[in-house]
Image (cartoon, rainbow, N blue to C red; front, side):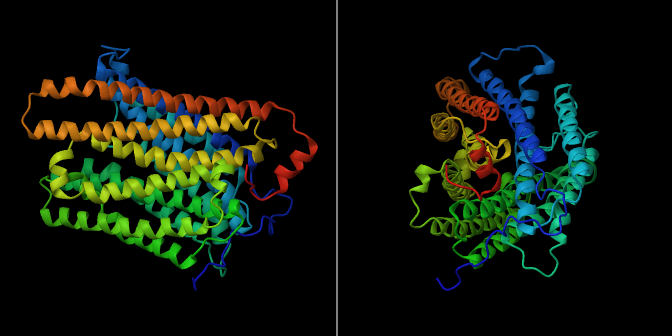
Amino acid sequence: MTDRATTHPAPLAPSGAGERPLVNLTLVKYHIIASLVWFFVGLTGGFLFSMQFFRYYPFPGVELLSPGRVRMVHTNMMAYGFILNAYFAGMLWAIPRLTGFPILSDKLGKVFFWGWQVILAFVVGGILTGHAQAVEWGETPIFTDPFIALWALLGIVNLVAPILKTRGRPLYVTLWYFTASFVWTILNYLMGNYIPQFFVPGAGGAAVAGLFIHDLVGLFVTPIGWGLMYYFVPSILNRPIWSHALSLVGFWGLAFFYPLNGVHHFLYSTIPMYVQYGAVTATVAVELVVTTVIVNFFMTLRGMGRTLVTSLPIRWFYTGMVAYFTTCLQCAVQVQLPVQQIIHFTDWVVAHAHLVMFAVFGSWIMGFFTELWPRLVRRPWKSRALLEWHYWLTTLGIWLMFLTLTALGLQEGYLWRGLNPWEDMLRSAIPFWVFRTFTGLMIIAGTVVFAYHAWATARQPAPAAVAERVEGAEPAAL
């Protein structure tokens, strides 16, 4: 490979930081804890919502906790509570180390952290009291939207400052992804939450909403997730990424093709067919781009396959990469119009959404949580066995959920296509829905194990030698 990368995450030593620590460990720790708290809120919402499908919903007739509102709490807290807090933790750790400069202001970091948690509390309260906005994944109440945009801007200003100080120096690909995502996220959030409701009604508004939904994943969740992978994987393996050129192919491919994908959420709708065909073509093109990224990371791992066994963070990261390739391949297939005739509106779509949001990005988040937590509390993990329980319960839970709902989606689609009675579909689906709830319990159990383990690890005494190693060393395999 002639273009093998020589670029690698910068040394840890601060540059020009004075007495101020390069990384604010307290902020990183707070965002991880907040991420886990909102993750439990989202998981609880998903678990409760799933029970209505087999007539065991625990709050029938209670409007405040009606299933539709609880479902919106589930989806919004996964995006803005769990993932966003986790991403800020990762970026607060990675950006100062890659640039050699601390964030703009620790005080601004604290204002952002606490303000964001208050906003999330208002989002949950607004949704449960019936003030959700009628835009999928943009259900955040309209009175919270200006604050969400403003606070996101504050957080971005704090993070982008050290990147701007690197003028004249080449940027590692992680910072390319972060910087682009900062611009895309603000524009996309404002577009999705204001244009369909106030300026473009009807089919045009639906097209804009489709772009918003998909770009929230593709231009916020995905680039920051990949940016963190490009930082943590080479850092833990202690080797450069296989090809820096290939990493840039992935970046520009994402930037060019992903914004065109959103309309594939509205195939067979009143949106002009040439727009729908364009979305299908761009979706297939993204899969080709994704393949280059996957090849790059697996070639980086070559000769070090055993780290998948010995290092829990690496195992989480590569499990997420397999899920990412799977979900993108599935996406390229499911946007084909003949396939849409079978799976449209079925549980196949629900399976796909869970695979991408949790099997991919959730796995990556758990990977760098597992890597960072011992370094933040200056103690080694208390138990290797508990780490394994967390990994297996969570991974098996999400993959079994994906397979179950995918099979159910196909069954539903063919029953509908055969014009079978609706009641027959419902009766045949109930065993699948019951098992889906069981797989959700597996994920909840795995997360409880992790939360307990993190608490127990933080409370155990830290031997001086261990504390010194955790504080000063580069990421090491568990």
